[in-house]
Amino acid sequence: MSKIVSIHSFRGGTGKSNTTANLATLLAMEGARIGIVDTDIASPGIHVLFNLDQSEMMHSLNDYLWGKCSIQETAHDVTGQVGASIKGQIFLIPSSIKAGEIARILREGYDVGLLNDGFRDVVKQLRLDYLLIDTHPGITEETLLSIAISDTLLVIMRPDQQDYQGTAVTIDVARKLDVPEMFIVVNKTPESFNRDEVRRRVEQIYQCKVAAILPHSDEMMTLASSGIFVARYPDNPLTQELRNVAYLVQQ
Amino acid sequence: MDQSAFEKLLLELDSHHGEIRPSDIGEFSNDLRAWLNFVLRLGSFSLKDLYTHLGLKIEQAQALADRLVLRNFIRLDETSSAENPRYETRFSSHTRPLGKPSTDLWKKIE
Image (cartoon, rainbow over all chains, first blue to last red; front, side, top):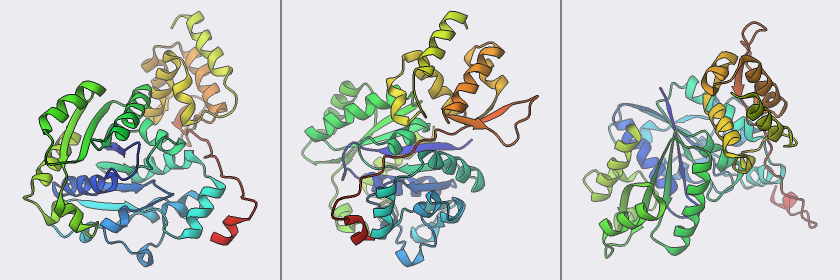
């Protein structure tokens, strides 16, 4: 039985794409077949983590939404790009990074129902164990769709007042959409914070389980999206925390 | 399901004009929202699945399915037949296209 997992945050820059890529890698290391869809059409980025160059993108999610190709044709096998021993497989469906194509999809809009069809098709055709949806921040029709069809929702937030408020909105919406399973991941937590206290407060405020309190990491900053953190730093404490997230998603 | 409660939910559904967008779901009553969320997660289902899971009579399930097809929320599956109607969730709606700026900015970007 495949599982659809949406990774969402109300605000940008919380680390959605990094969390998604690392989660995909950890699950694939254990033998799972993973699909990742970059639905952040306005500002795509996860392809960078997998070192997927524009010239290598035969088709993007945009092409599928315009009816130029099937969803399977947009899936790029990026397993070999991870730089670690992977028992499973990782397929990435990137959004276009051509300015004209981003502009066109924003200008013309697109049929959100096609996304729904595409998600279901790609799970079936590629025999995926997990489909991870890297969403656009905030609340839009696309993100609502992704949340509505998810089995699991990971809400990423930073310990920041603006994030606290926005996360409340996201959690409220997710509850209205009856998402069966929801976790919060607190990211970029300063070393000086008491992590147990942060966990306790967040769980109390949102009445939602915290999957991990991820520390701010200089190694992550230095890596600067040039690779997958858990593959480069398998023994780092941040990797261990991300393993906890993967474990919860697998349950 | 009790017919009067069912008709009340159908009335609420009928009062919604056009396709059901993802952003509409949160605006419905708890009962209707629970139905729609459930149907959405079924993905692919038969009429029998619908009346079994939602505790409806077969005529009620058919009336609900017909309305959801009209609003592009579900559609008939390609394997559907008159004897065994099958559906798949659709959730069709268009994102709101941005207007064209007077300076024709889009053209310059493209």
